[in-house]
Image (cartoon, rainbow, N blue to C red; front, side, top):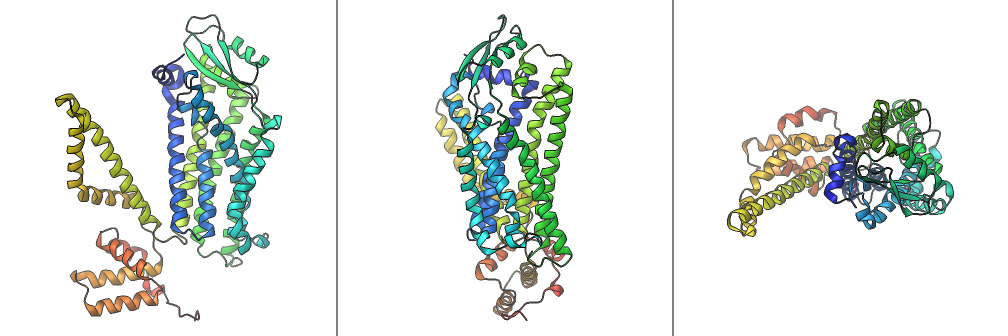
Length: 476
């Protein structure tokens, strides 16, 4: 059996495109974690907002859809078959359930963003329940269809080659021996390298789900486009901010373009190969006796796995942008705090390990180095966090409403002498009351200004107080 070192050495060999597939797998996992983190952040930003819950669930499913190669990046060898038995459920059950849930959520978009022709769906009752009914329905659908032959992977085998052997051997992972497995062994021919990989059934129903997902995404794109168009024409006053829907549209558009590119790439490989391409052909392209055409097909096939995660990452980024610009005040600050905490923790962990290893080599007691590093980081904690705040503000710009910007401008004027007098505080309180800002928001805004996260230049650039007209309680 291959060891972990041999597995990763093979993954980064020239035969395996110098780790291209492995890198894609690891990046996919990072995108999954990023999407899950953003999903949790959006949920926490407004736990009572149905739009937030809808977007949070959708982001979570999109992250899972980006992680199809998760198992192949984590010790995908017979020695760790027990681990792969667990990860297999992620690759099949979790992955395709997420696809189904996402498609249902896409069709629920008219419930949260009004369309004239589907205005009957834009009701508070649907908004209140659709965000959790969709996941329940998606799970039930998968449980009902997973045992149907067209959707069930019944048979899988390990393909084992020892360098110099006449042909590869088969070790059934689950299910039974199938004739197509012998055909692949014949196509591989004599073993020219030592490797272990797997092959499994390729049910048409699973391909249907994967190919159906971009189609439903395209329908969702049309939903968003129609909502924006009707809003611009004055027929859809329910959208509070057109920028929100525009951001969603850009996110969907970027994803659809990515998926269309993937479909085009798959079609090109189909014509280049002269027939249907599955993961079984990948085994032959990678480990057989490939010619130049086979290597090109293997590269394009592997490159296709990178397109979807990147497209989903862009979509999630625009989802967050849309949420920032809509109802979730303060989520950008939460992002900064999460960013600086994660980076500071990462720096501390790496520094602790390096310090421990260095002291272990010098005096034979590594913990001393870790303690010294920890104390040093505590001493310089504030300067480091300040630097991280500055960096994060460049990547995650602040997003405020016009009312908040108006208060910031008033506060900046009062702070010109670095002192807030009693009269100035009364005036600021009056301004906050006129614009409907509560004490929590006021403290947040003032803290941002005092910490340098908001500058006078950015306030003047983004605000226009003359256009802001505070409304009285009766809306006049």
